[in-house]
Image (cartoon, rainbow, N blue to C red):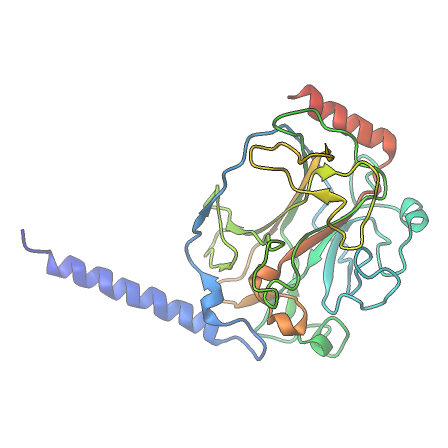
Length: 311
C-alpha cells in the first residue's frame, strides 16, 4: 500500500516546528549557558528499583529563601567555598560556619523537630539577570540568571527491601552526585537524575524539556554505613550504595535511604540551568545534593521503627 503522503507531510512539518521551537528556546541562552545538546524532550532511562517502605518528612520548599554559596559538608569554615549557590531546607542556620553544636541549637523548617539540613545547587532562568550578578557564587563564579524557587521539595526516608535498617548516627554527613562530573568524564560518582512529573518511572542525566509538567530533580544518597564514622575524607567512603537487589556490601550496615525530590514549574519558553563550578559549564550531569543528619536520636529511632515495622 502506498504511504499516505498528506499525513506524512503533516508529521514532518510538526517535527520541524518542534525542533524550531526548542532551538528558539535555547537560542535565548546567555554566555556560559549549556550547549543545546544538553536539553532533551524524551526521558530515556527507566527506574528499576525494588519497592521499600518509606516515611516522608515535610520541610517546605525553602519559602524563606535560605541561599548561600557555602558548603558545610565539603568546605566547612570556608565562606563561598562552593563557588556556586545552594538552596536549603531544614536547618535554618546552615552555612560555612556551621558546627554540630550550632546546628543542634538552631530552628528548622521541617516537621517533627528534624533539625537536619538538606541542600543542592539552585536552578536559574538564564535569559535574565540575577540578584547576585556581581556576587560570589553568582556572576563572579560564572553563574548568571534569576534563581527560580522550587515549587515542591520532598524529603523521603526509605527502608531496605531486604533487611531491617539501623538508625543513622547523628551528625552524619553525606554527598551524592558529582559536582565535577563534566571534567571527571562522567565517572562513577555521577548520579544526576532529572525527570518530568508527567513521565513517572523515567529519568535522564540531561536537562528535560517538560513543557507544562513540573521539572523534577531527584537525589538518592548511599545507605550502607561503615558502622563507625560520620564523615570521611571523600565524604563518600563511610556510607556507600547498596549492591544490586538492595543488599549492603560486606562490613557495612543498612541505614535509612534518603531520597530528596525537588520540583520546579519552569515558565514556558524560558531557558534554564543549574549552578556549577565555572569549568563544569553548568552541565546537568553535575547535579548533586548534600545532607547533615541533625535529627534528634529519639526521632531517628522512631523513624527506623516505622520503616522496619512496615517491611
